[in-house]
Length: 267
Image (cartoon, rainbow, N blue to C red):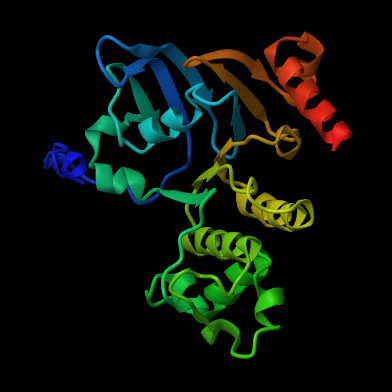
């Protein structure tokens, strides 16, 4: 607790907010990063993501996958180089406006005590047509209809009265409703069973359509249709390409995929 309280607060920025309309083009130009000057583990990282691309980031634990997301959202600033959004450095805009330009679906879904509708809308006024369009696209509507109070069903303090898969579908509905052009999906299906994973995968495929999406995935079977797969190890992108191309290279990704396939065969 005291360690947390001792953290330095983020500085107040005298910068303009990001424009409200974002196309979703992302560029990393010669980015170096480390949590301290003597531990720079991301060095000269370069990539260019065009609007609407589906980009998967894979690699072993500690490879730097989540760090990429933290840099995109300016939870940390790069040591050198720059990250651009729609051609402009993200350091030229406020952190708040950068972070609000993304929609996120994380491994651990966060719900609060309130109705399902309140959890999807965050208690904000929304258009009813947009709300129901989002919930149907996110595959939420089907299980909601089985509940006695529908969208007015109260979620417990610990959200124990709905399943993990249902929680994830609710967070996907939030992302649909936010209507952002850039998505971050961080291990969004890792804590559900295979049958529920298929349903969530369908909802996420619909969510990612015509949006720039960054997908951090452990199960490689969920990202084989990505436009680009970035393979990371020790902070570096060591391979990149499509699923088919990376398998043909028979490198790090090939070995990673084969090991998961063999595990699935054993199970």
